[in-house]
Length: 432
Image (cartoon, rainbow, N blue to C red; front, side, top):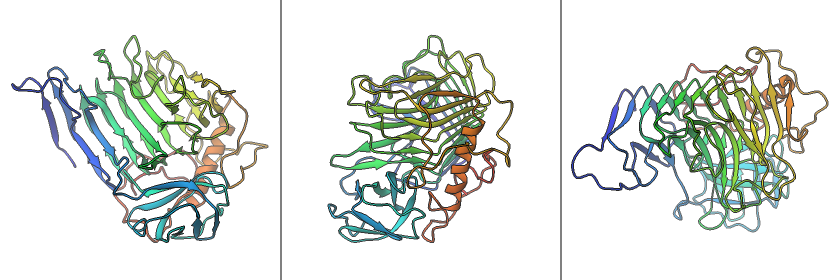
Protein backbone atom coordinates (compact mmCIF):
# COMPACT_ATOMS: atom_id res chain seq x y z
CA UNK A 1 0.00 0.00 0.00
CA UNK A 2 2.09 2.93 -1.27
CA UNK A 3 1.42 6.56 -2.29
CA UNK A 4 -2.35 6.25 -1.94
CA UNK A 5 -4.86 8.81 -0.73
CA UNK A 6 -7.96 8.02 1.34
CA UNK A 7 -10.60 10.63 2.22
CA UNK A 8 -13.74 10.10 4.27
CA UNK A 9 -16.05 13.01 3.46
CA UNK A 10 -18.80 13.67 5.99
CA UNK A 11 -19.94 16.79 4.11
CA UNK A 12 -21.60 14.61 1.50
CA UNK A 13 -25.40 14.07 1.77
CA UNK A 14 -27.09 11.03 3.29
CA UNK A 15 -24.44 10.32 5.90
CA UNK A 16 -25.58 8.12 8.81
CA UNK A 17 -25.64 9.86 12.19
CA UNK A 18 -23.93 8.44 14.11
CA UNK A 19 -21.83 6.28 11.85
CA UNK A 20 -20.81 2.77 12.86
CA UNK A 21 -17.43 1.21 13.57
CA UNK A 22 -15.70 2.48 10.46
CA UNK A 23 -12.29 3.72 9.42
CA UNK A 24 -9.83 3.95 6.56
CA UNK A 25 -7.58 0.87 6.49
CA UNK A 26 -8.62 -2.08 8.66
CA UNK A 27 -6.47 -5.19 8.24
CA UNK A 28 -7.62 -8.48 9.74
CA UNK A 29 -5.22 -11.32 10.63
CA UNK A 30 -2.41 -10.24 8.32
CA UNK A 31 1.39 -10.15 8.27
CA UNK A 32 4.28 -8.68 6.30
CA UNK A 33 2.49 -5.57 5.05
CA UNK A 34 4.04 -2.21 4.10
CA UNK A 35 1.96 0.99 4.27
CA UNK A 36 4.09 3.76 2.78
CA UNK A 37 3.81 7.43 1.85
CA UNK A 38 0.02 7.61 1.91
CA UNK A 39 -2.47 10.16 3.23
CA UNK A 40 -5.60 9.54 5.28
CA UNK A 41 -7.96 12.38 6.15
CA UNK A 42 -11.49 13.11 7.26
CA UNK A 43 -13.47 16.07 5.94
CA UNK A 44 -16.39 17.58 7.84
CA UNK A 45 -17.68 16.74 11.32
CA UNK A 46 -16.53 13.36 12.60
CA UNK A 47 -19.65 11.22 13.12
CA UNK A 48 -17.91 7.98 13.99
CA UNK A 49 -19.78 6.18 16.71
CA UNK A 50 -17.44 3.22 16.94
CA UNK A 51 -13.66 3.25 16.82
CA UNK A 52 -13.11 4.69 13.34
CA UNK A 53 -9.40 3.90 13.36
CA UNK A 54 -7.26 5.40 10.61
CA UNK A 55 -4.85 2.45 10.28
CA UNK A 56 -5.85 -0.58 12.31
CA UNK A 57 -4.88 -4.24 12.61
CA UNK A 58 -6.88 -6.73 14.61
CA UNK A 59 -7.39 -10.45 14.72
CA UNK A 60 -9.30 -10.86 17.94
CA UNK A 61 -11.08 -13.77 19.56
CA UNK A 62 -12.38 -16.00 16.77
CA UNK A 63 -13.74 -19.47 17.55
CA UNK A 64 -12.68 -20.87 14.16
CA UNK A 65 -8.98 -20.02 14.74
CA UNK A 66 -7.28 -22.29 17.30
CA UNK A 67 -5.67 -20.32 20.13
CA UNK A 68 -4.47 -21.51 23.49
CA UNK A 69 -2.80 -20.45 26.68
CA UNK A 70 -1.82 -22.40 29.76
CA UNK A 71 0.90 -23.64 32.06
CA UNK A 72 3.37 -26.16 30.72
CA UNK A 73 3.47 -29.61 32.29
CA UNK A 74 6.95 -30.26 30.91
CA UNK A 75 9.22 -29.49 27.96
CA UNK A 76 12.37 -30.66 26.27
CA UNK A 77 14.66 -29.09 23.68
CA UNK A 78 12.03 -28.93 20.91
CA UNK A 79 8.70 -29.69 22.60
CA UNK A 80 6.24 -28.15 25.03
CA UNK A 81 3.72 -30.38 26.81
CA UNK A 82 0.48 -29.44 28.56
CA UNK A 83 -1.55 -32.51 29.54
CA UNK A 84 -4.61 -30.34 30.23
CA UNK A 85 -4.83 -29.14 26.61
CA UNK A 86 -6.39 -30.52 23.46
CA UNK A 87 -4.37 -28.78 20.78
CA UNK A 88 -5.95 -28.81 17.34
CA UNK A 89 -4.06 -30.66 14.61
CA UNK A 90 -4.37 -27.38 12.68
CA UNK A 91 -2.46 -25.37 15.30
CA UNK A 92 0.86 -25.38 13.47
CA UNK A 93 2.57 -24.18 10.31
CA UNK A 94 2.13 -20.83 8.64
CA UNK A 95 2.38 -18.10 11.28
CA UNK A 96 1.55 -20.29 14.30
CA UNK A 97 3.91 -19.51 17.16
CA UNK A 98 4.28 -20.24 20.87
CA UNK A 99 5.46 -17.59 23.33
CA UNK A 100 6.80 -18.18 26.84
CA UNK A 101 5.25 -15.40 28.92
CA UNK A 102 6.23 -16.23 32.48
CA UNK A 103 8.50 -18.53 34.42
CA UNK A 104 11.57 -20.41 33.16
CA UNK A 105 12.22 -19.60 29.51
CA UNK A 106 10.30 -16.31 29.59
CA UNK A 107 11.01 -14.10 26.59
CA UNK A 108 11.35 -16.83 23.96
CA UNK A 109 9.10 -17.62 21.03
CA UNK A 110 9.27 -20.36 18.42
CA UNK A 111 7.34 -21.39 15.31
CA UNK A 112 5.07 -24.40 15.90
CA UNK A 113 5.85 -27.03 13.24
CA UNK A 114 3.49 -29.78 14.45
CA UNK A 115 0.83 -30.26 17.10
CA UNK A 116 -0.52 -33.31 18.91
CA UNK A 117 -3.35 -33.18 21.47
CA UNK A 118 -1.05 -32.33 24.40
CA UNK A 119 2.30 -31.59 22.71
CA UNK A 120 3.69 -28.85 20.50
CA UNK A 121 6.85 -29.34 18.44
CA UNK A 122 8.86 -26.18 17.75
CA UNK A 123 11.15 -25.40 14.84
CA UNK A 124 14.43 -25.28 16.77
CA UNK A 125 15.70 -25.90 20.30
CA UNK A 126 14.83 -23.63 23.17
CA UNK A 127 17.79 -21.63 24.40
CA UNK A 128 16.39 -22.01 27.92
CA UNK A 129 14.06 -24.99 28.17
CA UNK A 130 10.70 -24.13 29.78
CA UNK A 131 9.69 -26.20 32.77
CA UNK A 132 6.54 -27.19 34.60
CA UNK A 133 4.95 -23.89 35.56
CA UNK A 134 6.06 -21.84 32.54
CA UNK A 135 3.13 -19.88 31.13
CA UNK A 136 2.69 -19.91 27.36
CA UNK A 137 0.45 -18.63 24.57
CA UNK A 138 -0.21 -20.21 21.16
CA UNK A 139 -1.77 -18.41 18.20
CA UNK A 140 -1.09 -17.14 14.73
CA UNK A 141 1.12 -14.08 14.58
CA UNK A 142 -0.95 -10.95 13.98
CA UNK A 143 0.52 -7.81 12.41
CA UNK A 144 3.81 -9.65 12.03
CA UNK A 145 6.58 -7.65 10.36
CA UNK A 146 4.58 -4.57 9.39
CA UNK A 147 6.23 -1.40 8.09
CA UNK A 148 4.15 1.78 8.45
CA UNK A 149 6.34 4.61 7.18
CA UNK A 150 5.99 8.16 5.90
CA UNK A 151 2.20 8.50 6.09
CA UNK A 152 0.09 11.60 6.88
CA UNK A 153 -3.03 11.19 9.02
CA UNK A 154 -5.37 14.16 9.57
CA UNK A 155 -8.53 14.64 11.68
CA UNK A 156 -9.52 11.00 11.93
CA UNK A 157 -10.02 8.87 15.00
CA UNK A 158 -7.59 6.64 16.90
CA UNK A 159 -4.56 7.10 14.67
CA UNK A 160 -2.33 4.07 14.09
CA UNK A 161 -3.51 1.13 16.15
CA UNK A 162 -2.35 -2.46 16.44
CA UNK A 163 -5.28 -3.63 18.54
CA UNK A 164 -4.66 -7.36 19.04
CA UNK A 165 -0.92 -7.79 19.17
CA UNK A 166 1.97 -6.91 16.86
CA UNK A 167 5.41 -8.47 16.44
CA UNK A 168 8.67 -7.28 14.89
CA UNK A 169 7.09 -4.26 13.23
CA UNK A 170 8.13 -0.66 12.61
CA UNK A 171 6.14 2.59 12.70
CA UNK A 172 8.44 5.38 11.51
CA UNK A 173 8.33 8.91 10.06
CA UNK A 174 4.54 9.34 10.19
CA UNK A 175 2.69 12.61 10.93
CA UNK A 176 -0.61 12.54 12.84
CA UNK A 177 -2.54 15.82 13.25
CA UNK A 178 -5.78 15.83 15.28
CA UNK A 179 -5.86 12.10 14.60
CA UNK A 180 -5.35 10.35 17.91
CA UNK A 181 -2.37 8.29 19.09
CA UNK A 182 0.01 5.60 17.92
CA UNK A 183 -0.56 2.64 20.21
CA UNK A 184 0.29 -1.03 20.31
CA UNK A 185 -2.06 -3.16 22.40
CA UNK A 186 -1.83 -6.73 23.59
CA UNK A 187 -5.10 -8.56 24.09
CA UNK A 188 -5.67 -10.97 26.95
CA UNK A 189 -8.86 -13.08 26.85
CA UNK A 190 -8.30 -16.15 29.00
CA UNK A 191 -11.86 -17.43 28.81
CA UNK A 192 -13.44 -18.86 25.66
CA UNK A 193 -12.86 -17.77 23.01
CA UNK A 194 -9.24 -17.65 24.15
CA UNK A 195 -6.89 -15.03 22.72
CA UNK A 196 -3.53 -13.89 24.11
CA UNK A 197 -1.88 -11.61 21.53
CA UNK A 198 1.62 -10.38 22.46
CA UNK A 199 3.27 -7.07 21.56
CA UNK A 200 6.94 -8.03 21.16
CA UNK A 201 9.98 -6.48 19.49
CA UNK A 202 8.61 -3.38 17.78
CA UNK A 203 10.07 0.03 16.94
CA UNK A 204 8.20 3.37 16.95
CA UNK A 205 10.58 6.10 15.76
CA UNK A 206 10.65 9.66 14.44
CA UNK A 207 6.90 10.20 14.30
CA UNK A 208 5.06 13.46 15.08
CA UNK A 209 1.71 13.37 16.90
CA UNK A 210 -0.18 16.59 17.66
CA UNK A 211 -3.71 17.58 18.64
CA UNK A 212 -5.50 20.90 19.06
CA UNK A 213 -9.13 20.26 18.16
CA UNK A 214 -10.34 19.17 21.63
CA UNK A 215 -12.14 16.11 20.33
CA UNK A 216 -12.41 13.46 23.03
CA UNK A 217 -10.65 10.77 20.97
CA UNK A 218 -7.68 12.90 19.80
CA UNK A 219 -5.27 12.01 22.58
CA UNK A 220 -1.72 12.94 21.54
CA UNK A 221 0.06 9.79 22.66
CA UNK A 222 2.55 7.12 21.64
CA UNK A 223 3.11 3.85 23.42
CA UNK A 224 2.45 0.23 24.33
CA UNK A 225 -0.37 -1.12 26.49
CA UNK A 226 -1.05 -4.55 27.95
CA UNK A 227 -4.85 -4.74 28.20
CA UNK A 228 -6.15 -7.57 30.40
CA UNK A 229 -9.84 -8.16 31.07
CA UNK A 230 -9.16 -9.62 34.50
CA UNK A 231 -6.27 -10.20 36.87
CA UNK A 232 -4.01 -11.67 37.97
CA UNK A 233 -1.69 -10.69 35.12
CA UNK A 234 -0.72 -13.50 32.75
CA UNK A 235 2.91 -12.57 32.02
CA UNK A 236 5.12 -10.57 29.64
CA UNK A 237 2.54 -9.72 27.03
CA UNK A 238 4.40 -6.52 26.07
CA UNK A 239 8.16 -7.04 25.71
CA UNK A 240 11.21 -5.44 24.14
CA UNK A 241 9.63 -2.45 22.39
CA UNK A 242 11.52 0.75 21.51
CA UNK A 243 10.13 4.30 21.22
CA UNK A 244 12.79 6.66 19.84
CA UNK A 245 13.04 10.31 18.70
CA UNK A 246 9.32 11.01 18.43
CA UNK A 247 7.57 14.34 19.08
CA UNK A 248 4.23 14.90 20.83
CA UNK A 249 2.36 18.23 20.95
CA UNK A 250 -0.59 17.88 23.35
CA UNK A 251 -3.60 20.13 23.70
CA UNK A 252 -4.49 21.92 26.92
CA UNK A 253 -6.19 20.64 28.95
CA UNK A 254 -4.76 17.19 28.28
CA UNK A 255 -7.10 14.40 27.24
CA UNK A 256 -7.60 11.04 28.90
CA UNK A 257 -7.13 8.22 26.39
CA UNK A 258 -10.62 6.66 26.30
CA UNK A 259 -9.33 3.14 25.56
CA UNK A 260 -6.92 2.99 28.51
CA UNK A 261 -8.62 3.89 31.77
CA UNK A 262 -6.21 6.43 33.22
CA UNK A 263 -3.48 7.62 30.88
CA UNK A 264 -3.46 10.97 29.11
CA UNK A 265 -1.37 12.66 26.43
CA UNK A 266 2.26 11.48 26.49
CA UNK A 267 4.34 8.32 26.10
CA UNK A 268 3.05 5.06 27.58
CA UNK A 269 4.43 1.79 28.87
CA UNK A 270 1.23 0.77 30.56
CA UNK A 271 -0.56 -2.24 32.00
CA UNK A 272 -4.33 -2.26 32.33
CA UNK A 273 -6.44 -4.62 34.45
CA UNK A 274 -10.05 -3.86 33.58
CA UNK A 275 -11.33 -5.86 36.55
CA UNK A 276 -9.59 -3.71 39.20
CA UNK A 277 -11.37 -0.67 40.58
CA UNK A 278 -8.91 1.84 39.09
CA UNK A 279 -8.02 -0.11 35.91
CA UNK A 280 -4.44 -0.52 37.20
CA UNK A 281 -3.25 -4.00 38.24
CA UNK A 282 -3.40 -5.18 41.83
CA UNK A 283 -1.05 -8.03 40.85
CA UNK A 284 2.36 -6.74 41.93
CA UNK A 285 4.38 -9.92 41.29
CA UNK A 286 3.94 -10.43 37.53
CA UNK A 287 6.00 -8.69 34.85
CA UNK A 288 3.53 -7.64 32.15
CA UNK A 289 4.89 -4.62 30.24
CA UNK A 290 8.61 -5.29 30.15
CA UNK A 291 11.81 -3.74 28.79
CA UNK A 292 10.48 -0.69 26.97
CA UNK A 293 13.10 1.83 25.83
CA UNK A 294 12.14 5.48 25.42
CA UNK A 295 15.06 7.37 23.89
CA UNK A 296 15.38 10.94 22.61
CA UNK A 297 11.67 11.77 22.59
CA UNK A 298 10.11 15.22 22.91
CA UNK A 299 6.87 16.16 24.69
CA UNK A 300 5.18 19.54 24.63
CA UNK A 301 2.33 20.66 26.90
CA UNK A 302 1.78 17.29 28.57
CA UNK A 303 1.03 17.22 32.29
CA UNK A 304 3.23 14.10 32.45
CA UNK A 305 5.48 13.12 29.56
CA UNK A 306 5.57 9.39 30.45
CA UNK A 307 3.11 7.00 32.07
CA UNK A 308 4.02 3.74 33.85
CA UNK A 309 2.30 1.67 36.52
CA UNK A 310 2.32 -1.47 38.68
CA UNK A 311 2.59 -3.96 35.81
CA UNK A 312 5.48 -2.10 34.13
CA UNK A 313 9.02 -3.46 34.61
CA UNK A 314 12.53 -2.47 33.49
CA UNK A 315 11.66 0.68 31.53
CA UNK A 316 14.35 3.13 30.41
CA UNK A 317 13.59 6.80 29.73
CA UNK A 318 16.79 8.18 28.21
CA UNK A 319 18.14 11.33 26.57
CA UNK A 320 15.25 13.77 26.79
CA UNK A 321 14.94 15.28 23.31
CA UNK A 322 13.57 18.61 24.47
CA UNK A 323 10.07 19.99 24.72
CA UNK A 324 8.58 21.74 27.74
CA UNK A 325 7.23 18.76 29.69
CA UNK A 326 10.44 17.41 31.20
CA UNK A 327 11.11 13.72 31.61
CA UNK A 328 9.59 12.68 34.96
CA UNK A 329 6.92 10.00 34.52
CA UNK A 330 3.59 9.57 36.21
CA UNK A 331 4.13 6.29 38.07
CA UNK A 332 0.87 4.88 39.39
CA UNK A 333 0.04 2.10 41.86
CA UNK A 334 -2.98 -0.12 41.38
CA UNK A 335 -5.59 -0.51 44.12
CA UNK A 336 -4.40 -3.37 46.33
CA UNK A 337 -0.83 -3.37 44.95
CA UNK A 338 2.22 -2.66 47.08
CA UNK A 339 4.24 -0.76 44.49
CA UNK A 340 4.13 1.22 41.27
CA UNK A 341 6.49 0.36 38.41
CA UNK A 342 9.61 -1.73 38.97
CA UNK A 343 13.03 -0.54 37.82
CA UNK A 344 11.96 2.49 35.82
CA UNK A 345 15.23 4.27 35.03
CA UNK A 346 15.37 7.93 34.02
CA UNK A 347 18.64 8.84 32.27
CA UNK A 348 19.67 12.46 32.05
CA UNK A 349 22.54 11.67 29.71
CA UNK A 350 23.53 13.80 26.77
CA UNK A 351 23.17 11.72 23.64
CA UNK A 352 22.29 8.29 22.32
CA UNK A 353 23.50 5.17 24.09
CA UNK A 354 26.99 4.42 22.65
CA UNK A 355 26.75 1.58 20.18
CA UNK A 356 29.67 -0.41 21.61
CA UNK A 357 30.14 0.71 25.21
CA UNK A 358 26.83 0.48 27.05
CA UNK A 359 27.63 -1.28 30.36
CA UNK A 360 25.63 -4.09 31.87
CA UNK A 361 24.17 -3.26 35.26
CA UNK A 362 26.65 -4.20 37.97
CA UNK A 363 25.50 -6.73 40.50
CA UNK A 364 22.38 -7.84 38.68
CA UNK A 365 21.83 -11.41 37.63
CA UNK A 366 19.38 -12.88 35.11
CA UNK A 367 16.12 -14.24 36.40
CA UNK A 368 15.57 -17.98 36.14
CA UNK A 369 14.97 -18.73 32.48
CA UNK A 370 17.17 -15.99 31.09
CA UNK A 371 14.72 -13.15 31.64
CA UNK A 372 15.43 -9.59 32.63
CA UNK A 373 17.08 -8.92 36.00
CA UNK A 374 14.56 -7.80 38.57
CA UNK A 375 16.00 -4.75 40.28
CA UNK A 376 14.62 -2.20 42.74
CA UNK A 377 11.13 -0.78 42.85
CA UNK A 378 10.48 2.74 41.57
CA UNK A 379 12.46 5.37 39.70
CA UNK A 380 16.23 5.60 39.43
CA UNK A 381 18.25 8.55 38.14
CA UNK A 382 21.35 7.99 36.02
CA UNK A 383 20.19 5.19 33.80
CA UNK A 384 23.16 4.17 31.68
CA UNK A 385 23.41 0.85 33.50
CA UNK A 386 19.71 0.24 32.98
CA UNK A 387 20.00 0.97 29.28
CA UNK A 388 22.91 -1.47 29.19
CA UNK A 389 20.77 -4.17 30.75
CA UNK A 390 18.11 -3.75 28.09
CA UNK A 391 20.67 -3.59 25.27
CA UNK A 392 22.33 -6.77 26.55
CA UNK A 393 18.89 -8.38 26.65
CA UNK A 394 18.26 -7.24 23.08
CA UNK A 395 21.57 -8.73 21.95
CA UNK A 396 20.65 -12.07 23.53
CA UNK A 397 17.26 -11.95 21.79
CA UNK A 398 18.99 -11.27 18.46
CA UNK A 399 21.29 -14.28 18.96
CA UNK A 400 18.26 -16.47 19.55
CA UNK A 401 17.77 -16.51 23.34
CA UNK A 402 14.33 -15.04 23.05
CA UNK A 403 13.16 -15.11 19.47
CA UNK A 404 12.77 -17.21 16.40
CA UNK A 405 15.11 -15.20 14.25
CA UNK A 406 17.01 -18.12 12.73
CA UNK A 407 13.98 -20.28 12.29
CA UNK A 408 13.83 -22.48 9.20
CA UNK A 409 10.08 -21.90 9.21
CA UNK A 410 10.27 -18.14 9.13
CA UNK A 411 8.39 -16.57 6.21
CA UNK A 412 10.36 -14.61 3.59
CA UNK A 413 11.82 -11.35 4.80
CA UNK A 414 10.11 -8.09 3.95
CA UNK A 415 11.52 -4.71 2.93
CA UNK A 416 14.23 -2.98 4.92
CA UNK A 417 13.79 0.37 6.61
CA UNK A 418 16.48 2.94 7.31
CA UNK A 419 15.58 3.28 11.02
CA UNK A 420 17.98 1.53 13.38
CA UNK A 421 18.34 1.00 17.12
CA UNK A 422 21.16 2.57 19.10
CA UNK A 423 21.66 -0.59 21.14
CA UNK A 424 25.08 -2.10 20.34
CA UNK A 425 25.03 -5.04 17.93
CA UNK A 426 21.22 -5.06 17.81
CA UNK A 427 19.13 -4.35 14.76
CA UNK A 428 15.86 -2.66 15.49
CA UNK A 429 13.09 -5.25 15.30
CA UNK A 430 10.91 -5.01 12.25
CA UNK A 431 10.58 -6.09 8.67
CA UNK A 432 13.95 -7.22 7.32
